[in-house]
Image (cartoon, rainbow, N blue to C red; front, side):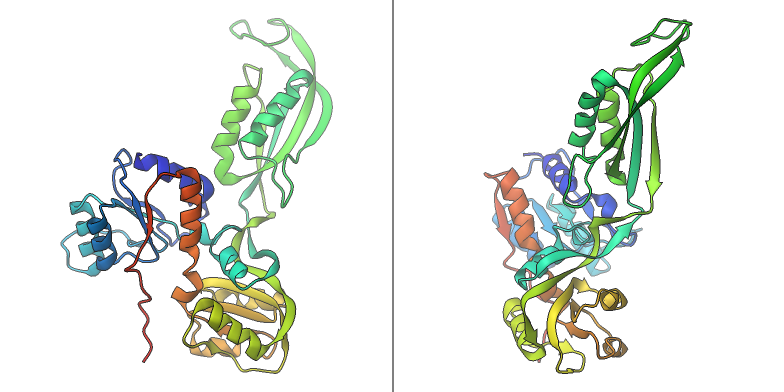
Length: 364
């Protein structure tokens, strides 16, 4: 199996366009044409992880955190990152990462964390805006259904839990074909009036190329008229964090105990206990302190995340229980999704969970 087949599948599910501006998800080393013998899944790429892949005869390492976040101007082995990149290249190892593009989807990092905490009625905590577009096109009445089906198949028409969403409006289109044209209807050099349907639908901006290709391929006209408008609407299927509800409200101490058990955490850092009950819970795997005001506006009773700073524990202000459960601990389950989406598509592919990937934070 070629590397490009695996990359294409992963990026169709977790588009790189959804990653944050500071991120570096995607293929870091490796030729897309190389044959892949198997893959090793890990949170972080370390010497031990690369040695494990080499010893097991696996030439693809898929990590959550990218090894390289910033541009490298030299490869001298002077630091850990340079050394590991050299090691991967010298052993012909492909390195691929799915980080914030994976975090920001409703099926990604925060969804599985919410699942592990048994949260119901899950929704993106802070949906992203300006990632949607509106497509408007005009189609002869007899071809409207075929065009609509094609653009839906390409990914347009999804609104929340609904698909195939569009608006139809019948009208009359006018045009005059020049002498060098090859009109589908009408005669050259004569004004033609054609009964048409105006079709409006929405699409994620990263699918624009695919949807327009489907439109042009299915539309009968020589010159296809269409408009694309940027939308400010928030997209409920992508964004940061997740919010949901416990099946039954719990005391703060019982909720903290359940987190310790579920995440196998030795200790939790948390804000002052107030004796309030916990029902509505926000989560953000990894560093999520920036979501404290969002969780408060959503009236969450608790926010489970990591990497909180000293003064941020005051920001709950008695209304929001802030829980720092650890970066590794809140992201440890992402490898389960990596495995599931790969094995479903490539059932005979060798996929291994790293035995060397460990939490870099230790407690005394």
